[in-house]
Length: 430
Ligand SMILES: Nc1ncnc2c1ncn2[C@@H]1O[C@H](COP(=O)(O)OP(=O)(O)OP(=O)(O)O)[C@@H](O)[C@H]1O
Image (cartoon, rainbow, N blue to C red; front, side, top):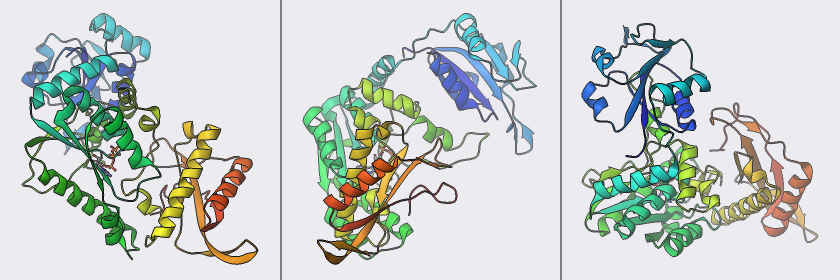
């Protein structure tokens, strides 16, 4: 390992990640560990330069106040504590140290080097992956999303043809998305890529299904079955690559924080398909994953892609999916994205998309009464996806989008802009 590390011990703070980010932003790698880490576990970590005991409001767990092991104070690591009244450290802070105080701790007290950067990280991971995998093969489900794409690029760099990527086109991808995955990974990065066009299979299963939960279940379940079938065709695969990132691990719960959501990734594979996991991004925050992707040479539009739900356009083609409405949705969505890119809004708006409800409205086309679909545009901004506000799109742009959609997608005769915040609405419609 090249990077020096600061260990943050979680004694019930809600701000562990804030401190981890602060330290990484100052150029030093940091990780959050449980309060009851043993001396042996601590010493097994590479390049630890200092420790922060980070207390906070969740310090009482099951009626007991959590403490670090006393032996830790006897070690030679420089140590400070924050909001931890029982601390035996010499330097104790009541609140988060500011950057100046943190710099003094990192660079003067701990003598850490500011050597946390993506180049070093990638070199380290490449070495670790090679050590873990040896001459064996790794299977990776590659969605074309940020996380699995960056994992793929990392694994290609580390083990080249020993990586087998499987991309499943479930027919609910955005326009040109699957083509983009093939272009980048097969044509440019020369990955061993299996492309499965399962459109018919997914749309067949979804035929006539209107309930959103049922739709999500069918899409998720079918994805696992397709992936499993491909995995069974391959021989000699011992490892499964996963795009687990740091927030997935933290949100799965620490000893003092409740589980926010269980992290799944490619969960649900049958028990007899046993793989050891390769998770090279599991220490990175999302923006670091993006920086890593850029450093690995992935195109910016892939790395800065807006969030896209796993069930894809399936949950934006509202109610029971029909092929003509799905096609209209795909085209309208592509026009919206194109116009947002042209006006630069793609760089500032968090998420924007089209949804199409399952009814038709009356319109006039070519001097005749006609029935057409209604495209609903949504564009929202959020920090944590728990609440969201509306982007105030300029009227000229809205009108241009409406004109283009109704001209280029003839089955659509109305365009509306949805202006409800979350709450009370959710970001997606289903
Ligand atoms: N169409 C697909 N083809 C192949 N793998 C997929 C596909 N959809 C999802 N996956 C796999 O399932 C994982 C979880 O999917 P999910 O939609 O929750 O995306 P995510 O956690 O945002 O990750 P990503 O950014 O890689 O899409 C993905 O990382 C990928 O490994």
